[in-house]
Length: 393
Image (tube, rainbow, N blue to C red; front, side, top):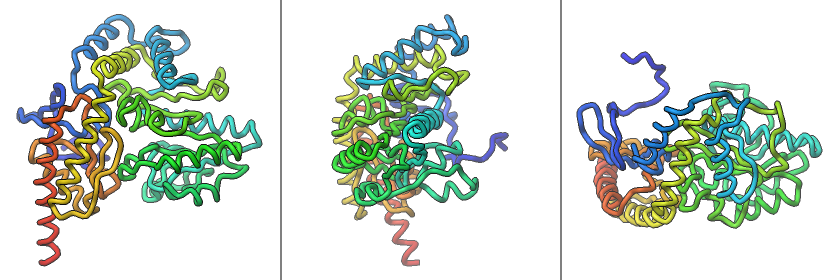
């Protein structure tokens, strides 16, 4: 029996090694990894340039506290703000921490500008498991066991401009959105909705904040998902894919929004090893043309999955951007399809209870995409057949 708390519904597989697009279990079986650590390994497992960068930095300097500057941290902050085209960066250890920093920044700004403290977020959103990020998350079922949560959050339906306009007012510090709701079922926000959110924030004195924990670092075919939309946020968060598997988070905000001395801190945030890993990850994405590959392979994957859904007689369609892809298969079938994919040698995850989510490394090739589509077709048809048997029994 495991000594770990049973917080995860784990598949009956123990993974021991990864190489490129593949991972291997304790029995030596290989799987094509279309989960990618849930959008965490954009350059694949054990990329040699990444391994070399991590090993070199680990042998040079691991930790000195943020009371002193380190070259990898300064270089990463400069690289990220350069790619974003604006701002200053705060480095932390995870997506939840990056969003905590974001929420503190918008509260800090709001209190100084009329005492604004409320954050408007979206129903179905997911921003983390800490108390503040859980309160920002638009999934009441996740709230109930831990109530009461911090106050100051209101949730509206995604892509509903009228609902958003009705709540953004003089008490609103920020509107917080995921450009593609990840855990909420891989639902992209419409360009018109984002443009309306930007306009409402500007007109009513609120900030526009993007949670790019899952969508950033090339996942959607651009460095950051907002770069594929008509808007630029005032502040946004990053994590998952930034260091290709090592724990890191980043919060990037307009310079005038930045924390001052003593207003925020992190013991381990932006340590030399994880920053070296992140710099190597960004280098590989740029050098190997992985932004363009994510866009092209994402289109191929969505088209193939749409065909597979139709062939299986399932009514859903795929959603997403780049290589953040969700195939809607109905709530009762997603788990069965994911299990069927595992049996066929592919890793994938559920999202929103009714979608099968694919977030492979950005290095994925056409043959691997086509293989996943074929396996998905078989798993979806099998799940649909099992559902029909259950209905007629």
